[in-house]
Image (cartoon, rainbow over all chains, first blue to last red; front, top):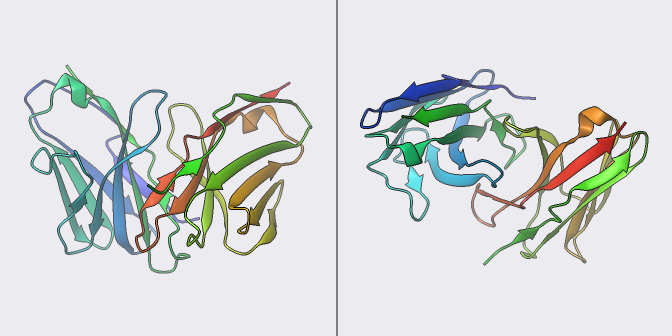
Length: 117
Length: 111
């Protein structure tokens, strides 16, 4: 299957600081990338969808000024959590779909565990 | 509201048995269906997808789709303790590339 990487895998930051998470498709061109958040023992929650070169589409209730998404190329999307607070501590996972894959097929990155102290 | 439903489990099966995981969906327009496996603390991993009525086999896994009854299932033959995980059913929302996920079924394979 297709490979998606995320960096960093874990990050601890102080309250009020910003954190950037990178998501890369390694062996295909990702025309669409998705960002999810997952709290312990809960389902994946879609935060936003981004298409290369366009503004991200955020799900209802997700603050676009707090969670900045940039999909600058066909292999890279970034999520920046601005002014992080302890309640932003969660498991953030990206996924990607795109050229060469079956329509709607998504491959997930390994996730980034964010802890805000 | 389009929905995807799964029994949350846990579903416990003995090693070597067949595990049967079910998923129902509400949107009759749905065309493709995806099964993911998620180990605790890890991200989801695509197992297989199906878009035609009937069965699709891949190794120990078989996906079954019945569009008339709006259900899709995943069978795992010769279940192993390493198959213990949460299995997520995902259905693309019509007209978008976004998935609607079921809540997942937790499978425990007992050695």
